[in-house]
Structure formats: C-alpha cells, structure tokens
Length: 418
Image (tube, helix red, strand yellow):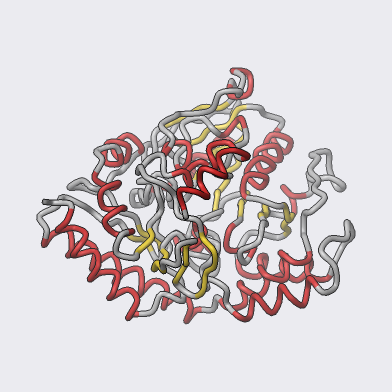
C-alpha cells in the first residue's frame, strides 16, 4: 500500500512529499503513509502501529491527539476558521508566551517557524540600520533565502549546503561561522542568529558558558542576539532555552509547540525592539492567517498543559531513553553516543559527541543510522528518516513505552552488527 501511495504521490507532488526529509532519501526505502495517530503511536496505511519519536518533529509534546487539544480545536472551528480580524485567543496566547519567557515583552504571531526567523532578521536589520548577519554552520533556521547557507536538518539530509534558486545577492550579507567557536563581530553586523541548543544537525550542545560569551560579544558590538527557539521553545523548560541556559537574547523565534500541532510561529522581544514592527514602526510584516483562531486555541491549550511537573516527566523520560539506547549500543559493541539535554536527544554513530557541524556530518554520513533506522522501523519504532534529526519523546511516552523501545533497540543494535 505504501509503495502504491508513494507512486501516486510522485505523480502530483514533487518527489512525492511536501517536505524533503519525508522522502526517505537519506535512509533509503519507501516512506510509510500515516493514517492516524494517538498518544505515542502512529498507524500507517497498511495497519502497522509504531511507537513514534518523530512526533511531527516536535509539536506533539503532549502526545498525538490529546483530548484537551482536540476539544479546543472542535470548539474553535465551530465559530469559523479565519476572520482577518483580531481575536481574544490571540491576546491570550501572546500573554501566555510573554508570561513564560523573561525578556519577551511583546510577541507577533505568524504561521510558521520560517516566517518567524525570516522576520526576526528583517527586524534586526531595521532596528540596527545594518545589513549583515552571522549564523552558525549546521543551524537550520527555515528556508528563507538568506538563512539557508550551511543549514542543518532537511538541507543536510538532502546532501546539499544551500539551495538552487538562491541568488548570490541573497546570501551576500550572511556570514557563516563554526558552532562552538566564538565568531568575529563588528559594527556592520545586525544580528547573530543561532539555535541555543542545536537540534537540526543532531543535538550538539553549546560548550560551557558559550552562550554567555556570545551575549557579551553582541553587547560589545551593538549586535542583536537572536535565539531560534522553534524547537527548544517551551520544550526545554517553561521559558525555553533562555531559561535553561540563563542567557537572554534580544529576539526570540518560536514555532512547533506553540501551535499545538497546527501551523503557527511567533517572534518576540523587548518593547523597544518590537516597536520597530508595523504598524508602530517601519519594519513591515503581515499574514492573512497569522493568529489563526483554531491554531491559537490549540496552542494555548497545549501550553497550559505544560507545567513544572510536565517538564519533569519529559526530562525523566528522555534521560531513561538515552541511557537505555547507550546500553543497547554498548552491549552490541557499536560505537554510538546519545547526547541528551532536557527532553531532547539524538543518536550519533561515533565514539564522541560532536561539537560542531563538521563532526556531526562525519558521524551522520557513515551509513550506520540508516541501518538502525530500518531495524527499529521493522520492529515497530519510528525514528526520523534522517541522521540529523532529534528524537522527541512526549508526555504520552510512558515508562512502559520507553522500556519497550529500549528492548527493541537492543534487538536492532544486534541486527546491524551481523
């Protein structure tokens, strides 16, 4: 059934998928087509059930199809799907975000993480009157032209460093520097944008005090520090990575978790910086579906589910999973590491945790991940079909589910050594 659906999809969708990593290009084989999901599980078109660690690449932090969010969506949709006018739910979710994240005074809702990062860069340029930006190699900030250079995630999974169709002029003011190395900044730089915990080249944590040093460096040169928290926002902690690491940027970009599984993103910062956004200032950004009433209802409900106890459960589950995976690899005699920070983890088939994109790339391209991916999938565990992606255990991944996953991982690890 999957092969038939994939063949049919390729007739009307480029490559048969609407996001490249879903094509299984980097792991081989035919993608499964999902028919439904609930809790920690997904079911494919052939009726197979999988323990899911893709979890829509992060949004499903409460698990698939949680009843509270489904109820919120049903109630909101009964009142209409889009108005093109302000709503109460926009205010409520903006208040929820600003209450949780210290330093975010105001927030503007958009429809995706890419929109959030793209606009944050425009805002930084408008607020500073400067053109150049600095990013780190392996950090993925969406598919806006100026941010695709040396990106991770889907870009790296496809074996490309940027994209055709992006003119040299679009990246002429983008400077790429190695992760975990202090960059050179000067008065021509508008912004330094980064994932505070990179999770689009696998999880490659910042070195101790690295983010604090970046904060000082930006202050010294009048550069705006931009945290892309599309993944880490409201996943690492109630206040995201800025709370986790104790470093406050000038601008934040959010996505994934805040939509409750529906398309939504946001960017925010101090009132001073955000006052440059139209209609208050001259930096223009707009969106017909920005602040969509169904998405805000879903996102607000999910955020309210994420209290201190929820984050404690998420971290305990991730620690248990990481420890179990490491044990499985060790027992099979496989060189592998499982970096884990809070509730986020990933797998590298190498002897040491990478510290930058070059090291992550070397580990990702040795072919071992693809073998392990299929060994797990055949036993009913769905990992991301690409070696640069993270695993996202959710509140629905109980101790029993994680123990079952570890048991399967032992079997899969032994298979790929034969």
